[in-house]
Amino acid sequence: MITQHHVGLLRITGLLLICLLLTACGSDNVAELSTDLPDASLATPYPGCSIVSVSPAVSLPSISGNGLRRALMRHEADCYPDVSEPPDWLVPYRIAFEQEFTESRQVPGNVDVWMGGETRFADDPEAPTEQVDASTDGAGRNCALFMEQFESTAISCMASIDTDASERAKVMLEGFRRQSAFKINVRGENHLNALLLGRDAMCLERWRLTQRQFDSRFESCLVK
Image (cartoon, rainbow, N blue to C red):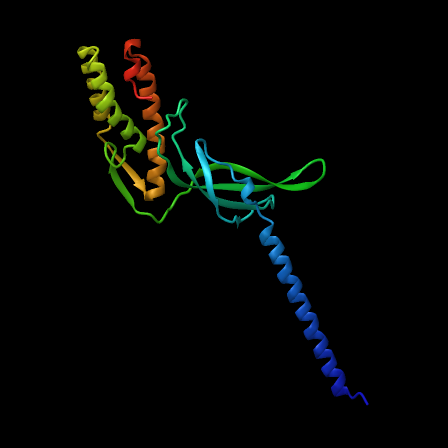
């Protein structure tokens, strides 16, 4: 005979089963939502950079008023100075970047897609701010390599052709170094590498144009 006590137990058991099913369903929904974020294929490399690793995207608070979802994805890349005629001796910088994505409704089709924003250098707000000398630690590695080659090979080569021209080239090089006698504020290694990348690009472009102004008889002396 089924007593009132048995009915109560059956009701409790049923409620427990329903709760377990709802919990399971809720977990599945969370998993689906957590994976419904921009994937690595959407990461956009910064000019002159090749992506080497991508971190999983994380959700950001939606923009107030429109309810569109947002996400942030970080990646690391090997970056070379973005110059018009890159030499083959350049050395790369390993730099961290971040990119923000916003959900967008595409018409026709009413399909939601992720639209990527600008790729920017990842900032570390907790890193201490330090000053570096623009002529030493703040000098781009590739710019330093160029100046070493220019001083050790190009100027001596030019001297074998025209000593006056080689002296003028030496004065130009020293003048460029004096222009770098200032301090730069940096916040963390990633910020420093980003600055060095930019300084490299400016330095190499400037000297590429400067070398073009030399007489054609010095063509074999120039740093390629």
